Image 1 (tube, one colour):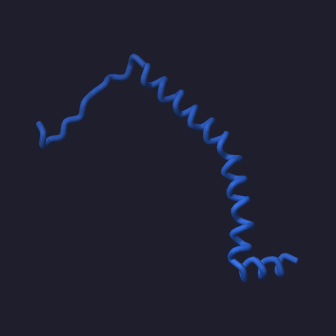
Image 2 (image 1 turned 90 degrees about the vertical axis):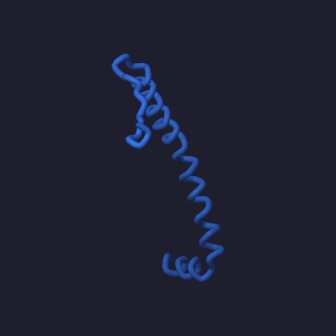
Image 3 (image 1 turned 120 degrees about the vertical axis):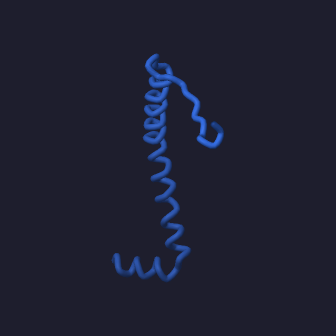
Length: 66
């Protein structure tokens, strides 16, 4: 069964593409909540450093400009 299906898919690239697209959409939509959670965690950690009193803002000047 798998060998026959593989031969059919590789003979016709359109069939392979039609089978591939729903899988990509499913993985993409399934991973969006995880990516959003990771991004919000990174933003939270970044905001903790921005609001910290131990951080000093500095400006970098190149040797050529000095």
